[in-house]
Amino acid sequence: MNNNLLLIKDFLDDKVRQYNTTSFIENDPISVPHRYTKKEDIEIAGFLAATIAWGNRKIIVRNAHKMLDFFGESPFDFVMQHKQKHLRPMEHFVHRTFNGTDLLYFVSALQHIYKHKGGIEAIFNKYSTAHSTQEAIHQLKNIFFEIKHPSRSTKHLSDPMRGSAAKKINMYLRWMVRHDKQGVDFGIWKQVKPHQLSCPLDVHSGNIARELGLLVRTQNDAKAVQELDKNLRLLDAKDPVKYDFALFGLGAMPG
Image (cartoon, rainbow, N blue to C red; front, side, top):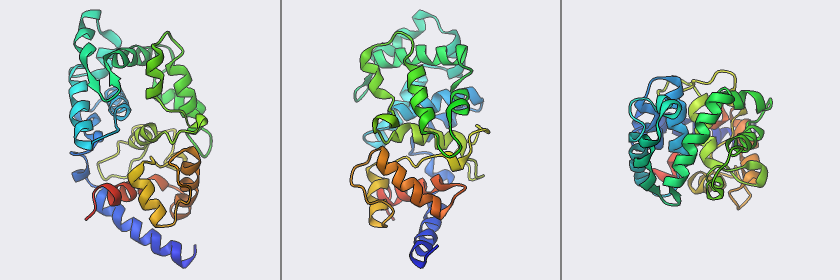
């Protein structure tokens, strides 16, 4: 590792220590799955919260908590055992372009996945490659929409094989896979490993990565994710996505 990379690593490692703490949770969408303790509840709450994680951060967190209020004490039990009457309150939910129609379909798709595919984790265990989860994200989207669905809902699950940075689902995977004893990420998935993950690339992390010379590509797309992944793996091959805390924190929460 050259001197410039060592300096960047030292700087970002320090910022990871600053931001990867439990104080990060309250104002982040990860606060939603932190409402629960059961594995399947955390998975479902996290998936739904990550799905609407775009726009103003305070509004994301507020609306994500509001959305999970529909599910009661156990999102998993609700998904698997709900009656039609329990779905009616969801019909009027709105977060930006994600609305009640989408939420109702997501409940159906999640039920299908847990009944017939072994759950979300099983899909990633099956389709992740030795060094990447991006193919598994693609397969998740295929499976998620293999039952009858509103065409409008497909835009709410990104596909890196179609050029998307897939920021929201990469963020969700960080939550599920990383376990570093800091109390932020859950680390409840054991077969997929941190070294397979990709950085959740958004305007904040992208801007900081470019300032540091870790990213040249100007678009925040799948190719940019690949470029950033390659460089973050030079800094930490085993846990490259820990730098999401540093890059996002520096961009969105300076100081």
